[in-house]
Image 1 (cartoon, rainbow, N blue to C red):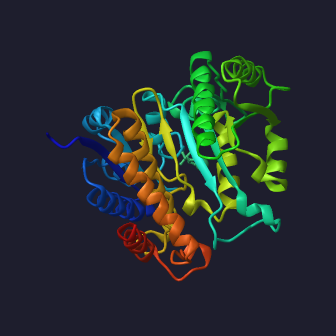
Image 2: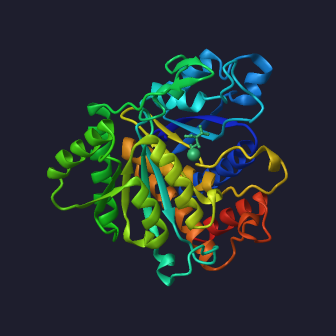
Length: 367
Ligand code: IPM
Ligand code: MG
């Protein structure tokens, strides 16, 4: 029997995207070898802000097509502050990919690990374990993903559109309920909170209306509501009370950084962006060009995004070895923090990118 093989398009991108992608792939390779039963083939594509500076395009059309045919896409980080399109916006390749491939479900786990900086004094803060589910293909990013959709009149007025559509929103909420169900099977609270501003915006009111409709099909999952401003308050007051938080695109962008901050920082903020036919995996942090190549970036967000990619591939292919490899990586990170063997520079520790990566690989082999 031939070994199931999966093609991964890799876009290292810019800044520390390059550093953390190397770490993620090294860990994925170690886990693949350790578990066996599947193979990942990596196809490195040139794209991003530095590439745009060099060539005048953010990705070449051939690479964009091959990415759409891959089994999964892995991105380091895209963007450099000084590289801009003629309209002065930053390179938005990633936003375009999200829209073109309809990656509506942005999954951003937020979990407190032991021996990491606890930003909140309350002892329950060590129980934080939630997921920000960020709609990632429309919302207020609708006009930013593709140029010329915004209405720029002149220097006095600019309008951008917040777009909510029924088909995407139905799929997003269904995803939220499936995710809560899956987490409940592993001890989760079985709770989805609809985060919105339905009291003010018609678009967001539709978002909540569809949430209520889809909740009807999921009677075993509890529901609650927060307006986005009240959620910001409660994420500081009692973040441990939440499980799955589902929200519009820009709300999710902002809240995922706030939530990342609660459990240490963005260096641990992993992310999966999932659609009906494609999956993209990337750390939720930016490209931090100021620390690029200095062996300082925390690679854990990228490494954990690699584990999310394995989970996704398992779900699509039913090759259970992929899920085993994902669990192996997750448990290595769990044990690493538990035993204070993972100590990233970002959290005041003594380990740079390479040391964190090697420690995770060491822990993989001990399992
Ligand atoms: C994120 C990032 C991106 C976003 C940027 C880099 C375009 O902040 O993934 O959260 O705004 O979505
Ligand atoms: Mg962001």
